[in-house]
Image 1: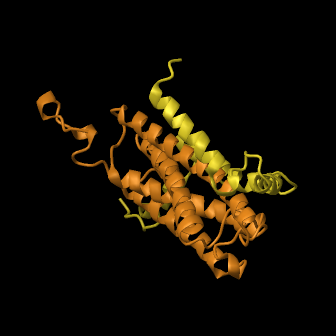
Image 2: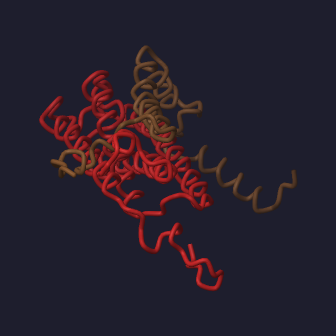
Length: 88
Length: 179
C-alpha cells in the first residue's frame, strides 16, 4: 500500500493530538484517567450496557426483516379496512 | 374494495421502499436521540442512571457508550441508504414519497418505542430527564413512538401509486424524468 505524504501528515497529527490532549483522556491511552475510564467501561455493567445499546437495534431489524419479506400485517392500519363497506 | 390479502400484508411493489424508509427512520431516529438528548440538551447519557455524569471520568464513560450507540445508528442509516439505492434500481417499485416518509416516521417511532421499553423501563440504564429519574417524560417518549408508528403506517397504507411515478412514466427515453 502506498503511503502518501498526506497520510503521514494526518497520522502525525493524530498521534500528536492523542498524546498531547488534556489529561490524555482517550480510553485506549495509558494515563491514570484512561485507566479509570477503562475500569468504568469494562466491569459488571458492561453486558447490561451492551444489551441496552444493541437490543433495540436487533429488535428493530427483526421488524424490518418481517416487513421486507412481507409477513407483518401493518396494512391493517389502512382506514379503508375500518370504514363500513357498501353492499354491492 | 380491499381484499383480505391486500389488507393483511404490504403490497410487494411497496416493500422495498418501506424497508428502506424503516431503516432510515430507525437510524435517523437514533441520531435525534443521540444528538438532541445526549449531546445538545444533555438531559441524559447512555449510562447516566448508573454512572451519573458528575465527574470527568463518568462523563467519558458515558461518552464512550454514546459513541458505540452512534455506531449502530450510523450503520442503520447506511443500510437504509443501501436499501434505497437497491429499490431505485427496481422498475416495479411503487416510487412514492408518501410511502418513503411514512416508513421513515414508522421507523423513528419503532426506535423510540423499543429503546424506551428496553433502556428506560427494563434495563434502567438511563431516563429521558435523568435528574427526574423514571418520570412522565419516559412515558411521553413511548407515546411519541406509538404515535409516529401509527402516523407512518397510516401514510404508507393510504399511499396510492404516484401519477408521475416510474410505473406510469412515459416510454420515450427523451421524456423519461430524471431520478
